[in-house]
Length: 271
Image (cartoon, rainbow, N blue to C red):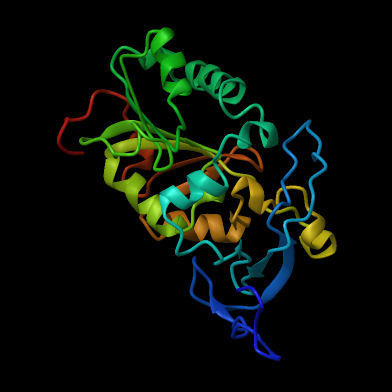
């Protein structure tokens, strides 16, 4: 995508298509704005670190139908590409809470909600980094806590079997393919299980804020940012009911079993 000089002429890359299909509903989505690759988001209570411009433009689109905000710049990246350029050694400076502080707080939250079932619960932390949340819960006496994260060696294989509780904190905004992400979660959720996850939905005044909104940060890997409409549509497509506790914390369960959510032990090989 960089300009190359050849002889006396300047050869430009082909222009990026004005419209591209929304990754949630398929509606042609126009450009919304541009961010330099080095733009990092600001986590709650944090501040944006001063960073030099990288000089590579990341184009974000916003769907006129479901309002999903996304970039397709990274669609062809491999997990190794993400580890090299985004989830590398510098990432801890951009988000110092991701490794231990936030997983520990999320573990305490899960223990508060489901501690009474800790002896029988089978829990999968989907997008769980290096496994700190699961380790915290095991320390609190939870029987089975596994971790999956496609960008973390040692945790990058999706475990077999099903789980009656799947957590997925701060993951959907990092997903190149959010539909595929939810589909993978659905394959591992027991019939009457529940998903507890977090991702910040767009504010009501995003049109006014534009690309100044703090949650937009390609350097953090924030490449798929949901609206209330797109998030509900995404989960409904896979047979789930969605309820939002806050703008950031949500729960999902299957439509045909949402009133019968059970947190007993599912069969290791099926729902």
